[in-house]
Length: 337
Image 1 (spheres, rainbow, N blue to C red):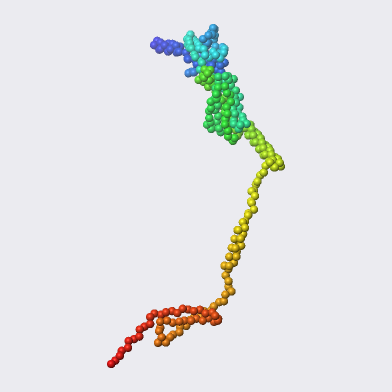
Image 2 (image 1 turned 45 degrees about the vertical axis):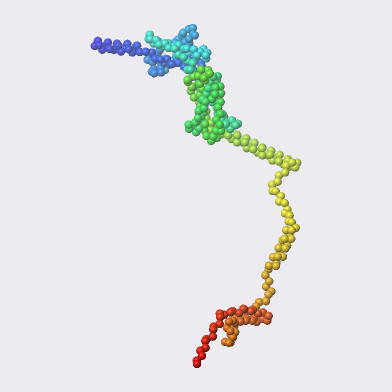
């Protein structure tokens, strides 16, 4: 029994001797220092907190505790001036006789408030302009993030001091959602912490303001086009009236000139063409079959003559004689003695 009591006593001492948690501090918007000691778990009791800068002459308890479920979990302490962030900040946490002291470098631990009054406007250059306000304007750089039709968009860095950004040639029938965040830039002690994202600003097809802007631009474009066309027509009429401008819509075709020799050639060609026309006034001749006239046996059969005579006087056709082959030799005569 005594052994069990001894064991319980030892465990109680170990629990009571548990080390106090670490303290994490952050400069919020260059206005105050905020420290927490509940990063790992909620404290079992209310700790007492002290915080001071290196050059402070007086050390006092936390002026305003941050509570969670009735338990102190942090402290918010005002910052006398922004440049104090470059000084070392000392903290001391106490609980039931135990103490934990730490020293913090806050120069790169500054977290700004999110930008406010984020607005989107369609500019006269047909680009989309994003504007916002950041109260800690000096030494602040920003980052603009926008999505198109609720899909993955683009994130762009904005140079220090600027509080506007241009989105080139936006899609008129798309929906844009824009958010902005800020942090301290390098020349003023660059911070590791970005501010939270601002409230989203929306522009696009579901936004009546954007539709009104597009309709207004369309009306003005139409009016300027009509005025410009009317002015151009008026200038052309004035110039034509004073004969200072000549506009030839169809070029004039010059009258053709035919040389005298060409005309003579056409006339001669016509007379030559008439000479080649057929003349059907000649008399027609009738041709009959020819007859052969045989000669006597004593005459040589080496040739014959044929003659063809037409019915009309003075119209005759002579067919040349056709020579036959050599006459046969007479048969030899036999003499009997």
